[in-house]
Length: 130
Image (cartoon, rainbow, N blue to C red; front, side, top):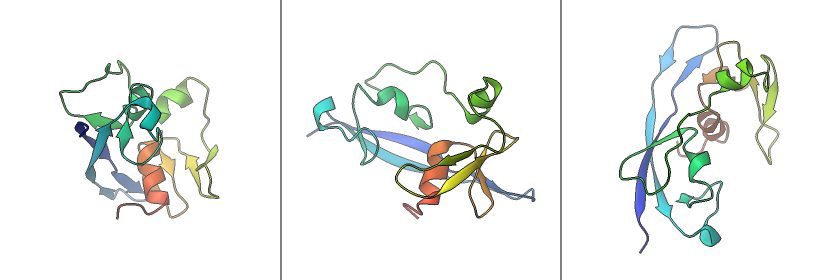
């Protein structure tokens, strides 16, 4: 049996044009597996190859068997660094669902919800785990 890690994803969002903030923190479980058995993108597995990328949006409990990422990059960091621009549309891989980069450093879905993290926006866009 492999070790299981607990992580939290902040799925909070703001409704465009309002001050309404919906706070939602969801726990996720990840199973530590060898890199040859890892899905790397979905499916609740984590390995040495993808541990750094999962830490972009997810906050993992200790003990964490991988190196901790020293900086968690945000959409705001990418805007400030010139890699993204306000009003850029980002399409979720394998779908026609797009989120628009906002001036506040969020990602706005077509229904007007603005998420702080790419993972939260992707989960909401696909209506997963509701």
